[in-house]
Image (cartoon, rainbow, N blue to C red; front, side):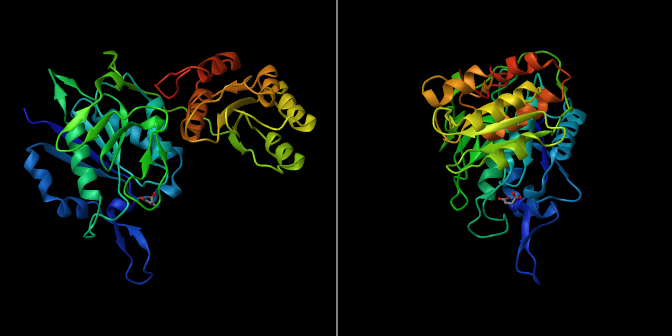
Length: 340
Ligand code: ASP
C-alpha cells in the first residue's frame, strides 16, 4: 500500500502571493502550492491536502486554530501515515508547542514547516522545506514512524517542536532549538538523531482540546515599575503569569516587587519562572536575586522556552487540576519540553 501523507495548509508566507494593488503579501489558495512543486509526485506517495478557510497569517492566530489542527489530525489519524502542517513562521513555535501537549500518545509524525519566501518566488526556501517535511512524515522503519513527535522542519534541521523559537526574521534558518539537540540533520541524506527522538507509547491516540487562556507574560527590564507589575497581577480572571526573568531566573529584590508576586501567589495565581536567555536554564537559589522567588512559591520553568511555557500553562489550566498538581507538572517534562 502507498504511503499516505496529509498536508494541512493553515496559511503563512509559504503560500502567499503579492497583492497587485497593495504590494503586500497575502495568503492564497492552496492549489497554488502543489502546482509549484510537481516534484512531490516523484515520491510516489498518496498526498492529500486540506486547506484552512480562511487562510491565516499566523500573526492572527489564536488557540481555536490549534483546536482545529488537532481535530483535523484526529479525524484523519487512521487513514494517514504522517502529517505535514504548513504554517506561518511568526507563531509556528507556539503552535508546535501547543499541539505537542494536545496530541496524546502520538505514534505518527506531525511535521510543521513553512518558509521565509513564498513558494512562487525564484529563490524560495518553501519547496525544499515542503519536500523534506513530506519525506520525514513518511519515514518509517519496521512499521514504526522514525519521528512520532510534533516537530519543526526548517532549512536543514528537524527540531522538537516545543523546543523551538523563531530566532531569525531574515535568513532561511528561521528556527532554532537552543536547549535540545536537533532530531535530524538534512544533507545528502537525512540523519536522524535516534537517541533524542521520543518513542511512541503504543497507547491509543487521543486529543485534548481544553485550553485556558487566562494567563499573562511579565518581562523583566531595568526600570519596571510597581504600577505595571500590579496592573498585570490584578487582571480580572488571571490564573497564571510567566515571568521572563534575567539569566538563571533572577529578578529585582525590591520589597514591592517580591510582595506583588507573593500576594498574587496567595490569591492562587501560578507564577512560572522562565529565563529571557534563549539558551540555558533557570536555577532559582543560585543568586540572591532568585532565592526569595523560590521561597515564596514561584515555579521553575528550568530550560523551557517562553512559547512552550505559555502553551503548557494554557493546557494544564484547561485540565481541571488542583493547583498543586499543575505546579507539579510545570516543574517537570510532560512532552520533552524541558530538562531538569
Ligand atoms: N506573517 C507570516 C506568518 O507567520 C510570516 C511567515 O509565514 O513567515 O504567517
